[in-house]
Length: 404
Image 1 (cartoon, one colour):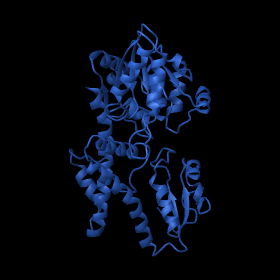
Image 2: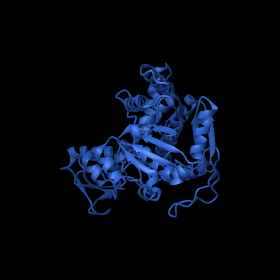
Image 3: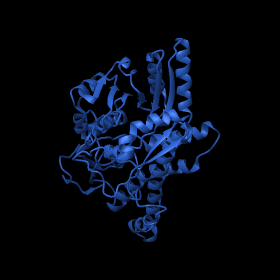
Image 4: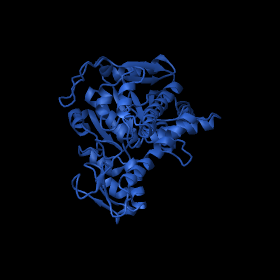
């Protein structure tokens, strides 16, 4: 196989995982990272994110995976991937300053006489591909540069805690391109995954009965929307089963049996039907808010997505209400919160349900003890204002009245 030279702008969760995996497959990858501490860690072979297998796969990639802060070292690549964050603004819309900043740096470093493929990996609103294309074109015009380029959309579908599995053994790979050239570049990039021709890591074998993934070739706007629609629908499934759980409690039904019964329907499926504290993290909250903002900006209301968010927020309060009722009030009671990260297998506490639950417990008079095998340091920082009221346990059952 003819392996590629790939540059990735941003060595955060998505960029680093993607870069390490592509290098493991045989491509030569250069990750550009401006954070000095993170860059020093990466150059020392240490993974700055908590994600199973990433540090191991970095070692396996060896000299095929390089790290730098110099954008000029990236512009000789066959493809330049933008994988920077898109945090939420106060109105819920996606903040594109990092995407635009990365695109500007790439455009200013492009060399005359060369042709570039810029890949949008960041989760961005519909129209961002076109916006980045126009920005690069304008900068090249101002520089009187003869460089040529195309912008391809390639959204990521990585789940924290199993990101490498999702990358190496995906359900589908989505590519939004305006022409066959961009599609061919991406097909070449993902060929080892599409054909499953690579040797799996010893610690991450190919799943039994796994079939080759589909390549979804579409236009850039549709590719951008696929990412938002996928996350909104998964968030909806979680909110739906939590709403059903509330009704089941009142009518004497078992929501676990309900989930099992409807999950066997192939039109529904069993995944994301576990009732609980609801969703959090860096994706569902941000992407559902951005989807609502996108609708608002285009004169279209999104009542289902809005209700999905409302139900999810209500679930956190509902859990505390149930505990308060079961304990006949919180006075003199100690509640253990077991698991602080927004999901198992990560130290990510962004919008974790546990944080709101602990704040509510304290507001209602409970003593709170908390434990997480991975996220204790991040949780202490996030709950700094409550440090006098939250005790941090070294084990799961340290002196509590009940556990949540």
